[in-house]
Amino acid sequence: MEKQQTPFGFHKLIFILLILLSVSMSALGRDILSDIIELKIESHIASGGNFDSVTVELPNLTGKTLAKVIEYCKKHEESSEKTGELSEKWDGEFIGGVEVGMLMDLFLAGYELKIKGLNDLAASRIGGMMLGKTPEEIRVIFDIKEDPLCKKSKSPKEGERFARDNPWAFQ
Amino acid sequence: MASQVPSIASRSAIPSCSLPEDIIADILARLPVKPLLQFRSVCKAWLGLINSSRFISMHLHFSILKPENHSLIVHTFQSNPRGHTISLLHLDSPQTSVKLDHPFPRFVNSLELDVVCSCRGLVFLSNPPFGKFMSLWNPATKQSKDISHHTITGIDGSWGVSAGMGFNPVSDDYIVIRIVFRTNHRIRAEIYSSNSDSWREINVDLQFDGIHFKCNAIVKGKPYWVASENAWENHGWNSRGIYLVSFDVENEVFQRVPLPNIVENEETFHGVMEFKESIGVLMNTASDDWIMWTMDDETSWSKKFMFALGLNRAMVGVLGCSKRGYVIAEKTTREMFLYDAENNESRDVLVRFQGRVFGVFNYTESLVSVKGSKQVG
Image (cartoon, rainbow over all chains, first blue to last red; front, side, top):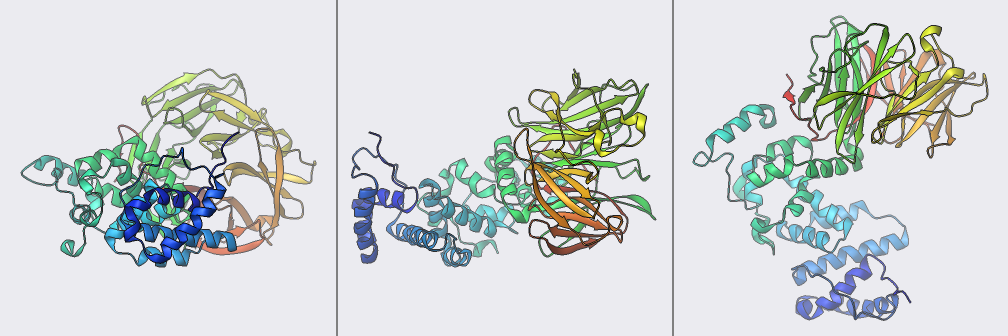
C-alpha cells in the first residue's frame, strides 16, 4: 500500500522540527514546545503513523529563527483555514519587524525548507532594502570583500570600461 | 550611509562568502532591471550571474508574476513637430508616461516606423511596407540589435511584407519572421534567429494573404496574423473571408486557425489580441456591443464576455487588453482608458496623448539581450 503523504506546509515543517527537536529544544519557548507535542500527534496521524523512513536535510537554524518560522506557518495555516486568504498586512508587519540578520535567516529557512510564501516574503524584503543602494553599499550588506571591477589596484580598466559603457545606470 | 547598513551576512548563520549562487539569484531575480545593471559591478560572481541566460529567464519569470511590473509601450505619431514617439506607460498608480529613446529617431514620416510587437521585454521595430530596416530593442537595458540583414531583398512582384516575432523556449531563441506577400499569392518567408544572428528562408506550405504589415498578437511566444484569401485583389476585407494564421516557432510551420463561428451579419470582426495568455478575438455587433471570444484549446472558441462601452462605435476604438484582462480603449478625443469588461465597469482614464495612437503593447521589462546589441541614444 502506498504511504500516505503528509500535507505540504505546516505539518511538513513540524515533521522536520520533530527531527530537529533534540538540537533546538532548549532554545524554543514553552508555548512552541507544547504546540509541537500537540502537532506531533496530529502529524503522526496525518502521515499514517510512520515516520521511520523519512530523512530531511536540516538547515542550520537557531531556535529563535525556528520560533519565527513556526509563527509564520501557524498564522498562514490558520488564515487559510478561516478565510482562504492570507493577510498581506500581517505579512508586512511580520517581516518589517525583524532585524536584518534574522531576515536573512528567515529567507534561508524559507528557501531550504521550501516554504514558498516565507521565501518570497523575505527575499522581496531583502530586495527592497537593496533598492537605491550603490554597489559599494551592497558589498557592505553582503559582506563581499573582493571588488575586482572597481578597485584600482586590481583591474582599473575593467571598472572604467563598465562605467563608460553604462553611464546611465549610475545616474 | 554605507557604515550604517548592517551586514546581513555577518549576523547570519551562513557567511555570505559561502552563500551559494542559487541563493543570491533568488534574491536578485526579484529586483528591477536598473539596479541589477548597477549591481553587475558588485563583484565578478554577480556580474557573471546577472549576465547568465539562466538568471535572465529566472528574472523574467518573477517579473511576469508581479502585476506592478506590467506596463504598456505606446506608439504615437504627431504631425507637429513631425515624428514618432514611443512611451512607457505604467498602469498602476501613480500612472506615469516616460518617453523612450528608440533606435530609429531618423524616421519622421507616419508610415516609416512601426512598432511590430513586444515579447519578453524586447520590442520589435520595423520600417514598413517592406521591413527594410528592423531592430530588436530592449528599452530597459537601452540596447538594440539591428537585424536589417535579411536575405529576401528583391521586392519584385511583392506588395508588402508582414513581420512578426516569437520565442522558442526549447532553444531559448528569439526569432523574427518576415513574410513577403506577392501578387501571385505565393508567399516567401524567412526567419531570424537571435542565437545564430542570421536569417534563413524557410519552406512555406500554407499560402495566405496577410492584411496588416505586422503580426496582430503574440500568445505564449507564438505570433498570430489576421489573414484572408486574396485580400489584395479585394482592396479590403469582410469578416467572411478572414481567418487567423499562427506560426509554430519550434517546428517552423504556419498553421491556419479558423475564427469563431459567428452568425452572419450579427457580429463583425474588430481585431485579435492577447487576452489573459490566450488568443482573443473581438467582435462588434450592430447595436454597438462588443463580444470577446477566446480560444480555450487548439480548436474551440468560447464567448468570454459581452460589454458595451456606452459610446457609438465611431467614437471609440479598442486597442487591446492589459495583462490583467482590462480592455484598453481609445476615444476619438485621444483619451485612452481602461475598461474592466468582465465586470462591466470603467477603470481609470489613462492618459491623453498629443498625437494619434498607432499601437499599444503589453510590456514587462527584462534583461533579455540579443548578441551584438548596441547602446541606444
